[in-house]
Image 1 (cartoon, rainbow, N blue to C red):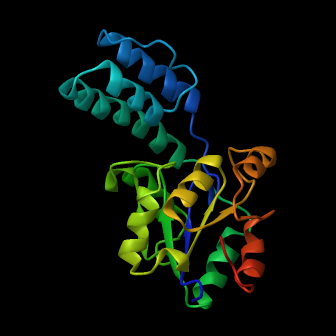
Image 2: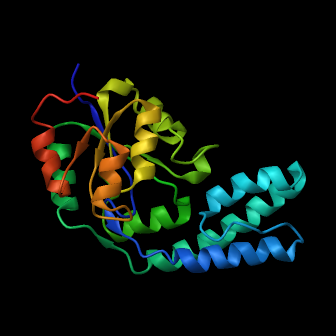
Image 3: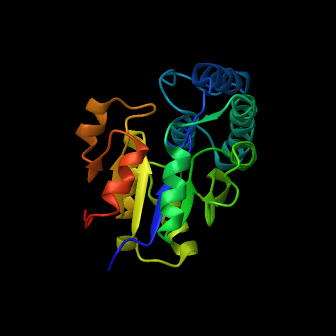
Length: 220
C-alpha cells in the first residue's frame, strides 16, 4: 500500500521560527524558584523536559498549576516569534506538489495552537492542511509518538501510509515511536551529524527532495 499522507513538523521544517529558547528557559526556572520548588539541573532542558522533572519534585495539584504557568510563558515567546516568521525555501513549492499528487497533508508541532494558527494564516497556508495537531491536542509531546498517532487517526489512514518530515532528532524519535516513515531535513535545530546518529529512514538536503522520495517506493 502506498503513501497517503505527508505529516510535517512546523518550526525549523516548514518555517523559520526564531523562538528565544534561552529566555523561555530562564523565565520558566524563575517561576519555579518563585514557587519555592527545587530548580536544580534544569538549565539545559526544554520546558517539556522541565515539566517531566517537576513530576518527581511536586504533587499533582502543584504540578498542574505550574504547568499552566510555564506554558503561558512559552506561549508569550511563541506569539512574539510568530510575528517574525518566514517560510522555508522550497516549502510552498513542495506543499503544492504534494497536494497535486492527491495526498493528505498535516502538521504535528509542539507549538501552541495560537502561534500555529497565526503562522499558518500569515503565510497563506490555511488551505493546504487537512489536520493540525498542536500541544493542546495531546497528552504527550514529541519525542513521544502520540501526537503523530493522533494525526494519523484523524486522517483515517494506516501508520504505514504516512511519512513524517522534521528537522530535529526529536522529530525522528517521534516518528519511530509512531512507526511511520521518518524523513529528516537539516534546516533547523539539529545538525546533520546528530540527525544521522538518530537514524531516520531518509535524510534529504531540502524540502524539494521530497518530490523525489514520493516517486520511489518508501519503507522503514
